[in-house]
Length: 408
Image (cartoon, rainbow, N blue to C red):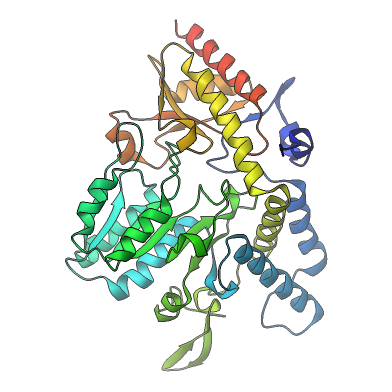
């Protein structure tokens, strides 16, 4: 069943915005952050208007309502990814903080000099820098699964690296530049066969694909609300109970404790052990509303719609002389089209498109090593979500032709 795209677009107020008189926004930057449906906006507004209070510690009506809304959202998120328990879902600020939590807590407790961590050449900086920092501190070794010319991971090299018995494998489920959807279940299984713990960056996959923790069997899985129709400032870390229980707390303070004495403390039980201080309560409510929204629309239908739009976009972009696309074919990628235009800097492409209300990203997209791999400083990136249409792709293509005319 196809999406009722007109109905869906009416759920997103910002899509009615004119960036200048008579120029309506064409938003093709959902890989950076998605737009928010009115259902999410109203859920957060309702929390602030009716139930605003701090959670867990109060016994008055507002505190109990706020706590219920906060924990109910966690249960929705756990169900959305098919976690075994809501105790396995830790609220964080975003995917970046989730990965740092693992590096600081699990990494510092389990990794020592000479231990190997396997990453990939297509990682976002969020899944590179924390391990660089730990390497400088602990002397761990880092190795990388190469990216092939067509934007796929070289799994033969991965097999060779696994012979060295890594302690951790950490990789992105879907590239934020190439759009490549990596064979996560296979990579995880291969890592487990040699005893490695496996962490997956799901920032780009959870918004667009049906993700199941029982099927994937990842040890840790990180994602952000703001890329999946939810608010900024909140994300989630899934972790297997046995691992989370064995890890030391990440931050110290209120709510992450069971008992505090002047000279000692006992940490709280999961998931609260990793959630110090007053959290982003309204954002958690919005996160839950976003999960409700996506579940109602249907993740399979969203994925099918995005594939149709992306396939159309790649075909249209390939028609333009001077355009070079990066990444695999549409059947192996999500809703991302990263490209360069011969003779024009990606920032100039993005700025000129913006004159017609077309919002795309330009730069290295927090993936500098990947751009170095392809010998380019930057790309322009159009990305698609459930609210995008083929007509918007046509506007993008017309805009690129306009850029070509301006630059001769």
